[in-house]
Amino acid sequence: MRALLQSTLIVFLLTLLLSTAAYADVHSLEATIDRNPVMLDEAIRLTVTADGSADRDAFDSSPLLKDFVVGRTSVSSQTSIVNFDTKRTTVWTTTLFPRKEGTFTIPSLTIEGKSTQPIQVKVIPVQEQSNVARDYFVTTDIDVKEAYLNQQLLYTVKLFLSSNIERGSLQAPEMQNAEITQLGEDKQYTDIVNGRRYQIIERQFAVVPQASGEFALRGPIFTGEVMAANTNQRFGFFNRTQQINRVGPDITVNIKPIPQGIDYPWLPSAMVRVDEEWPQGDSFVAGEPVTRIVTLTALGVVEEQLPDIPEFYPPNFKLYPDQSNTTTVEKDQSLISQRQTSLAIIPTQPGNFVLPEITIPWFNTLTQQTEYATIPARSITVAPASGANNANTPNRLDTPSISSASNEDIQNDIPSTAPQTNASASKEGEPLDSASGEFNTNENTQLNWMVTGALLVLFVIALTGWLVTYRKLKQAQFMGPGITNKTGSAQRPHSYAQWDEKAQFQNLMSVIKAKDTRLLTSALKQWVNALTSGKAQLSQFEGINASVNELYALRFSANKADASTQSKQVMKALDKLSHEAKLARSEWKQKSEGNNNTLSALYPAS
Image (cartoon, rainbow, N blue to C red; front, side, top):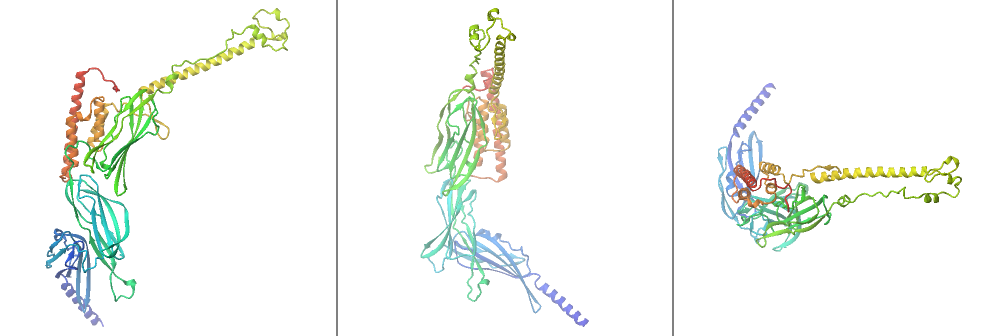
């Protein structure tokens, strides 16, 4: 018995060694495809089979990328032993998507020293009328094939299904240097095409190009599973599925650069408007804040493209801006972006003033002309504060005069029941003794003096309170009023921040250091306004304008460099802008000191 077991063990070990030697290497390698020829919108399933042991990661699909788009690759292994004969097989399956018509070659593939034979594939155009039933296909469409930089393109994909599918997925289209966003939900409906009924799934995308030039908008890929036909299968529970792949045709688009002569922030759109809102109406009182809300709306752009809303006001107004809010929504097959700013305005003195118009230039993609979204100038009247008139009106106390009342009047007020005995014995104006039953006027006089004293005390208290209030109001007018927060507590803002040139310059340097180009224009305008006391505009500083244009040109350049090179170019442009700002600051201060050695007014006249 022991000898039998030993013999069996020896035979098993020998068989194992022989079988290991049998599939230690790849003996043969074969590549096959599931169809040839293939239509342009169909996929090819490439199967590579290795006879023998092979590394699962040995398959390299990079040689196929020259003429095809390579999909996901799956790998499977199988080992079988029949009569001590061990056989191992490794299979790689991948999907190839042709991108143009013609005859192409699947090159020879090598795995562990073994190579496959090249395969020629013929890609034919899509044939609507053919002997092969078109059960599933994808179509693509775009509203315009020639557009400007940052102009929205409307891209539509339709998936046609002649029968139900078990599951499926539709990828998004692809385009270099573009932002692609799906618009709304999918639409499902039925239609008859070439005499055949299809269920159609429609999906739309907004494509916003970020660079100029000619680009290929790659069609989306549909991958699904349908029930495989098997007439020998009796029980539907064991039905197998078959994978199908379809790709939408590519579309070539030409993106034009920003036209020459555009000297404003580039905003291409079919519609741009700017609106304002005054919750308090047109009532203005000196020292009281009024909130102004301005909303910029643009069609067919993303919120990052919206420019800052200009804020120019007379020097008789203190401004406390809130952080602007931006948002993007989808409506009516288009993107709609908004920028909303909230500004607290406090007039410092009464009078008639004109708020300048708000103008935002934009490029109309329909007319291909520059247009302007405008809020007209507004004339307002600021009424004086409610306490201004009362401060000049003296307080009057109407106190009764004791000396004006004659003895006769006092006597007439005596009740008829009062005794009149010895009335003539008293001297005129001398009080009578109440103990003798006669009326004593001393109590009436004392009461009058008490009332008078109380009124005088009240007058002194009121006068003191008015003086304290007046002094605080004067101090508040000098230092600037506070703003009440949502909880009701007063917050103390910096009233000189708008005209503090040093603070505005430090803010500008911080924005440049942070490379925040969205706040750069606003920070430059605020600093120039503080530096020149409102006497000059940003456009008068040629060096600064040249640096800003160079900086924005890097962002919207047609020739996009790699990330590291572009970052270095941006840093160089920012350093140049910082240098130009410091130089302009020094030159303006020297010019101001030469023209006038006296201090300029804190609030320049309008």
